[in-house]
Length: 182
Image (cartoon, rainbow, N blue to C red; front, side):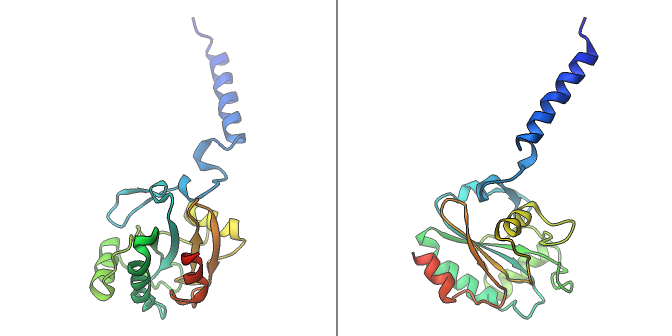
């Protein structure tokens, strides 16, 4: 007969060790590739599929003064996508409710108005108590806060953060272009 009390104690011990070691639920992720996000169509999007590419992560919004950056983001993506570069957009409604739409409405808006072909993810929160784990990692690693819509995080080919630029930095800014080209 199995001693349930002993089994419960062993289980608690194993779970405690796993938690302490950071094994459970992505504790202290080391790089971008440890995350799986949801794309705008609702499918899993493992960021590990981007190994070997430079990645520009941008929190986006459809009703913001910076929304026209979508055009230059698309142009930047098309200019460098054949050189192992990708942009990933994360719609967020954290700033003055400037992204109120559903994922479907956001996708339609981006396609119709800006011809966006770079990967767009499902709407998330980029700050506050419901901040998405990816953004918790981005902000903790860079000791930054997301200042507004269209803040840009640069991730190198190994999944490590290479830096970030504030929202008013345009996609073809020298800092971004030189980082992509180096």
